[in-house]
Image 1 (cartoon, helix red, strand yellow):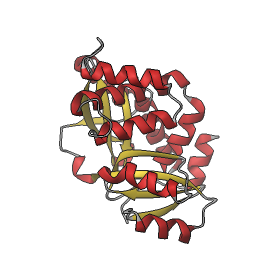
Image 2 (tube, helix red, strand yellow; image 1 turned 30 degrees about the horizontal axis):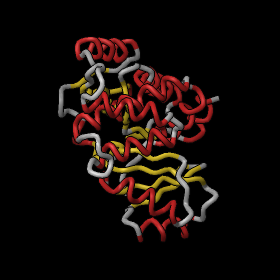
Image 3 (cartoon, helix red, strand yellow; image 1 turned 120 degrees about the horizontal axis):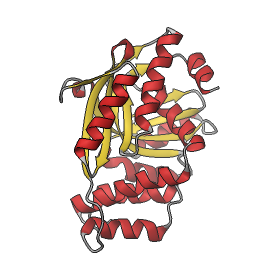
Amino acid sequence: MSGHSKWATTKHRKGAQDKARAKIFAKLIRQVEVAAREGGGDINANASLRTMYAKARSASVPLDTIEKAIKRGTGELEGVRYEAVTYEGYAPSGVALMVEALTDNRNRTGADMRNVFSKNGGAMAEPGAVAWQFERRGVLIFPKTYAEDDLLEAALEVGADDLSDHGETWKLTCGPSDLLAVKEALEGAGFVTESFEPSLEPTQLIPVTDEAEAKKVLRLLEAIDDLDDVQAVHANVDIPDDILARYEG
């Protein structure tokens, strides 16, 4: 069973409640645009675009907005050109971080990133310094209303490989290229996801049980996630549920 930070699930749920809808839309639109530029505008031939398209639609991004993003990506419409950048670093307590961003200005985004790390007790690292501690996976979140055995049996039949308990939800992982196919197959079998996304999953977790230290880590994670260019933040941290609950409260 691969390691997984419960912060990722908590962050998704908290983010859906707290962040402005426009900011969520902006991140998803940017992901659609880059996927179209890198693999073409045909969702049937571009697996990455197909996944991002489905993710945007599940978040209620208007179809017209998605179609315009695809056209900007393919050059049919003018627009800002974004590029993917990954940053590596450390949070307090030696927690490893991988940050995925889409930017139209590497210098600005890099400066913003260094500033956030510095102000929140973290440190940026050289490329490759922490990447070996993560692996690319597809992640799907399901409500606990589904019985574990039923969901696991159905998941294994359609190519998923791991189901874990995350308090109020089930977390399912699969190969990154199988993400959308697994989602569609499970929804066809009656299992509807709360969320799904390609992710960088930690292979091992660092437990942080001191509440003051855990809050430092969480503050850095949220500060990074709030940057406009940041698409996802991944951490190999394991924080006890009671500390996470108090932090959310």
